[in-house]
Every structure is written in structure tokens, then in C-alpha cells.
Image (cartoon, rainbow, N blue to C red; front, side, top):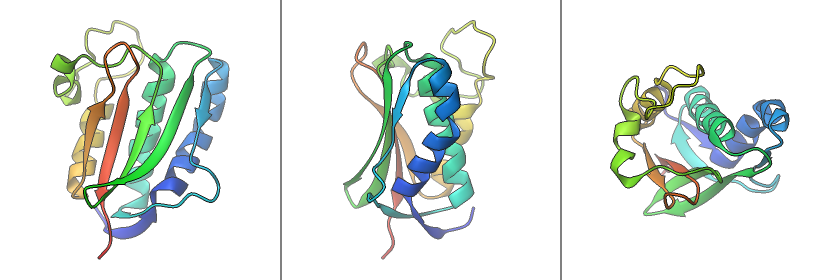
Length: 152
């Protein structure tokens, strides 16, 4: 991967825009960072966009119709973080590492998805010296957080 300066808020807006029609089909509103929001980080533009499209796409796919998905940026522990927060069922504590395994779909039997998106996303995040973790309380939606280093 390439280490370049990126703006996580801008990437969040772009990824949200790419999934707006899919969300609209399910009456889901995607709330992206505002036009003036900015959060610099170090990573590869294309790979971060790929990760965010996957995370937002999953949130839209697994959230109840008529809800919202928020994309929010924050600083924490010297890292730039962008979170995708949905109003779905959330992820049980016992499944929060297993969900990142290759071909893991947590027992879902719908036809969509191969179970590789989160596996690949986490590998890309770690290759950029970052990570993806899961927050949120089960039953109160999921919070997938991409953390990346910041410039010196």
C-alpha cells in the first residue's frame, strides 16, 4: 500500500455518495461528515475508499429499512478514526473477532456477500498501520471503526 496524506472526512463523504442510491432503495439515510469537516490521516486513498464502501455497504445491507447510518470522524489516542454507525442488531461480543475471519458471515443465509469484505478490509487497514474494530452495544446497532495513523 502507498502511504499518502488523505482526508478521512472527504473519503467518508465520497463513500456515502457512492452508496446513496442503494440506501435510498431501503429508505436508509446516510449521514456523512459535513462539507467543512476534515480529518487528516496517512493511508492509501483507494484502499481507504474501498474499506469505507464495504463498511457503509454492510451497514445499509443489514440495517432495518427506514433507519440511518452515520459516518463520523474523531481523534483518539493519536490516531485518526472514522466510524460507520448503524441502527441494526449490532454484533455480539463473542463474534467481534470472528466476524473478520475469511468467509465468515455469522450464520447469515441470504444470497448477498461472500464473507470476504471485512476480512479484506481489516488486512488493508493493518497494511496501512491501522486497524478496524467494532464498538456499540448488541441490540443497539454496530459501530465499525477504522483507525489510521496521522502525519508527523
